[in-house]
Amino acid sequence: MVGSEGACGSLILVGCGKMGTAMLRGWIANDAASRLHVVEPEGTPPDFASGPPVEWHTAADTLPGELVPDAVVFAVKPQVVDAVLPLYRRWVRPETVFISIVAGKTLTGFARLLGAAALVRTMPNTPAAIGRAITVACASPMVTKAQRRLCDRLLAAIGESTWVEDEELLDAVTAVSGSGPAYVFLLIEALARAGEAEGLPPDLAFLLARSTVAGAGELARVSEEHPATLRENVTSPGGIIDAALALVATEGWRDLSLAAVAAAAELPIGQIYRLFGSKQAILCGLYRRIDEAVLAEPPQAEAGEHARDRLFDLLMRRFDALGPYKPAIEVLRRELVTDPLTAMCAGGSLMRSMFWMLAAADIATGGIRGAIAVKLTAAAYLSTMGVWRSDDSPDLARTMAVLDARLRRIERWLAPLHRPRGNGAPLPA
Image 1 (tube, rainbow, N blue to C red):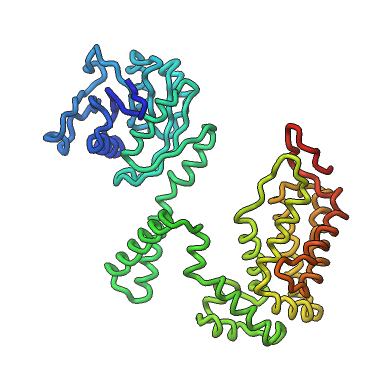
Image 2: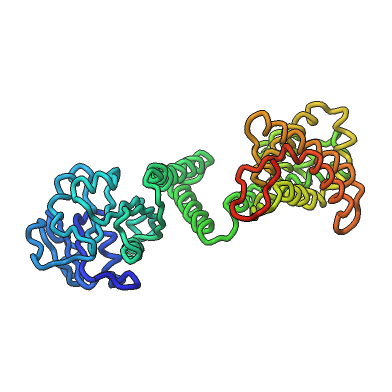
C-alpha cells in the first residue's frame, strides 16, 4: 500500500537493462520498497547475484499469485512492449500504478493494452546510469496524489524529476533532455579536437574538454545566476559595453575605435570581433543588456490595474538602468545626427525594446494596432528621454511626470491582452 510519504510496499520491475539496473540500484540503496520483484528473461545479472534480497523471475507467470504490487515499472525495449504489457493486466486496479520509461509509448497506447489503469509515462535520459538523470513524467487521470509521490520517490533513484500535464510536451522533452546529452558529448569531442589542433596532447585535450563541460554543467546546476549571466562572466560582453561607453563619454562616438575598446576592456581585439563585430553591435548590445535587466522581473498584472501603469513602471526601470550611461548617451544624441548607419541600428534596437516592454506589460503588439502602439511608445519614450537627460533629481520626478503625460496621450492604443476578471475596474481599450 502506498503510504502518505510515497513509501512503497511491493514493486515489480519489468526489464533490467541499463535503465532498469540503474533504478534498481537506487531503490535498493534507498529502501524504496519493502519487496522488490524483478522480471528479467535473462535471469539475475552477475552484479546482483550476491546482493540484497531481490526476488528474480524470468517471466511474468512465475510471480506469486497473491502478490498485490503498489507499482509496476516497465523498463523494456519499445519493440517488445506490446507483447509484454498484456501479461500484467491481472494487476490493473486503482491501488496499483503502472509506470513506463519506454520511449515513444503513449498513455493511450498503454491503456489500449492494459485497460483502465493508473498510468504514468516518463522520459528519463542517459545520465540515469549515474543517478543524474532529469526525468519528466505525465500521469493519466486515474493517478492519485499519493501515487504521484510514489513515482517521485522511485524516479529519485536515477536523478531529478518533474511533471507536465500535457502529454504532447513529452515530444519536446525528448528533443531537449532526451537528445541533449548527445550534443553535450559532441561538444566535448569538438573541444578536444580544437585542443589537439592547437598542439595539446590528445589525452590532455580530452581531459580538459571533459572536465570543463562537467564543471560548467555543475556550476549551472548549483548557481542562482542565469546561464546567460554565467556566460557573460566568461566572455565579458558586459565589460566590453562598459568600456566602450566610458570611451564614448570622454572621446566621442565618431572617433571610437575597436582597438581602443579592446585595450580599455583588457581583451584581445579578436574577442571583441567574436562577440560584437562592430561599434554598432556594441550599442545594440547595450539595448539588449538594459532590456534583460528590466525584463528579469516584469510587473505582475493586478485586477483593476491599467495597462499603462505597468508600461510606465517598465519604462522607468529602463531609465534607472540607463543612469550610469547618461554621459555617453548625451554624446550619442549629438553625434548620431551625422552617423545615419548607427542611427538606423539604434532605431531598430529601440523598436525591438519597445515591443518587449509592451509585451511584458501584457499589451497587444500584433497587427496594425500593435505596430502603432510600438511606434507611439517609442516616440513617448524618446521625448521623455530629453527630460531625463537633464533630470538630476534622485527620484526622477520630472521624468516620471513627463512619461506619465506622454503615455496618457497614447493610452487608447495600449490594448491589454487579458482583461482581469472579477470586480476590478475595466482596463482601457
